[in-house]
Amino acid sequence: MSVDPHAAAHGHGEIEMPHASMRDYVIGFVLSVVLTAIPFWLVMTMPLSAGATGAIIMGFAVVQIVVHMVYFLHMTPKAEGGWSLTSLIFTVIVVVIMLAGSLWVMHHLNTNMMPMPHEPTSQTAGQVP
Image 1 (cartoon, rainbow, N blue to C red):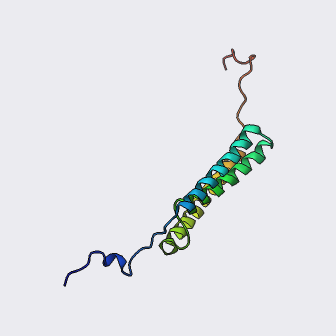
Image 2: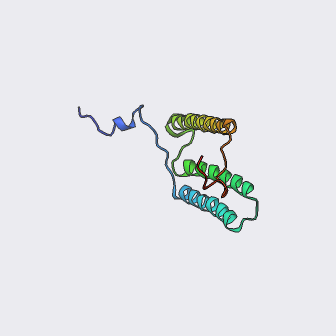
Image 3: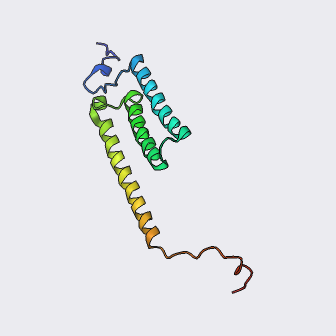
């Protein structure tokens, strides 16, 4: 009896990789271009305040990350039995906790620091203490 080398690849331990069509890649590319062009237009024309523009750009960035993960990295609940999406969600949760904690610590350090003296004026610049 001969063993078929391709038979092992079709067994129960096979990890099914998602297949993407050219249509999926074109949709992902068009969405990426649109999600880049709108924030670029917002920055170049400044129709809104700086805070609103920044918030909108951050929103578009999050949407663009999701588009890249779905259309180019093929991260769906079906891929690899859902484990790639599960590990991604865990990673995002850890990163959000780390960033939020870091920002919280830096904010409280900034508010609880002693006030720094201002730059010396021209009257006290030449004096020796």
